Image (cartoon, rainbow, N blue to C red; front, side, top):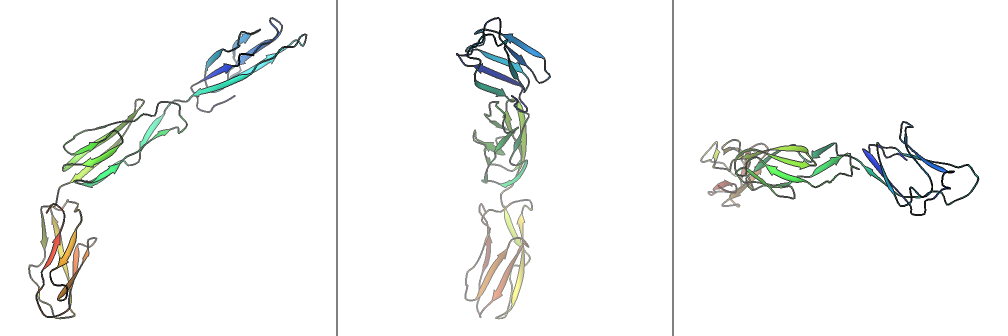
Length: 238
């Protein structure tokens, strides 16, 4: 029997295991063919034998002079050590208030080691982490979230951008004729902020419409009719 990657094997023999004492024998060998033990009679009945390595061979040698039950293995339990762990993310960039749940995967995936994960963070003023791996950005800056399983560690660097403090546009006022359009550029302050729920609004939608293109950092303004409209760009926490 071989359990690939096992550190050790524990073999439990059935209570009925019995061979003709001093005439028949059960031999146990490892992967290299080295003899691990020699047993006769009921010496292995109900016993658990633990061997180092991923392979065990059980061989019954009989003189055929008498018959007995033989042997039966109830269970073979492999001890497969944990080699490493990996997080679902190694780097995150979040805005204050964002929540992300990290997961830790154990390798090899068939390890029999305890897979309980403990979480810790480097600075609770920047990011917090729950015992379930939920990360919450609470303040601007950089921090590290670390998962530990059986002495193995994996980390995720978390960068939290500051809240929006202001929004600047390339123009304070604009005159258009009906049917004309203008691409109004805007800039978030500070420049490394990540806006939450960025929106644009026109105070008079019949006079002018405004469409946000956050990827390009512009608002497409289109004049529809005579009048005045105020175009407002806003984000949470500003």
